[in-house]
Image 1 (cartoon, rainbow, N blue to C red):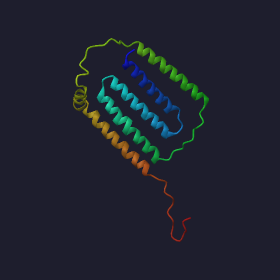
Image 2: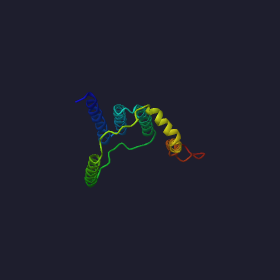
Image 3: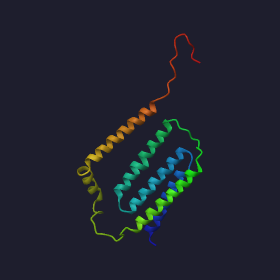
Image 4: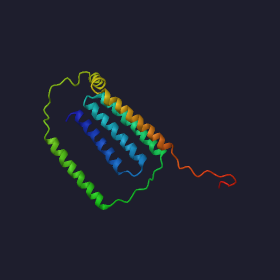
Length: 175
């Protein structure tokens, strides 16, 4: 058993542990912290795959920016922290859905040809990603930035919108 395999299993355990915690925790802030922990563990798996650029982007974008935006969204909005009562039928439906998803994923993984094929993927992969991103995929890249800008403006508008009370008329006291 190699050291790389041991590190993979540790990172996989942290990733799955963070995901399970995120699903099972009841406080929203704790859920976001568990999600950030999962994002950073996934970045470690990317490092093991020799995808340093994707790992850096994972930490920077998901581990940092998305988690901070989610925390700001939670803090700036009104939310009810009480756990809603859930129907027992919904829990069984979710369990059946997870079981079906597991079986489909297992079938798909068993059908993959795992023999390595020669490729020049690891030769300066950051440059290759940049060339592809700014030549072939420049329109989707720019559209993504516009969608993120619209989402940011919408979040600011929703956060600033308060329920304003009726204005006090002249001669009335404000109690």
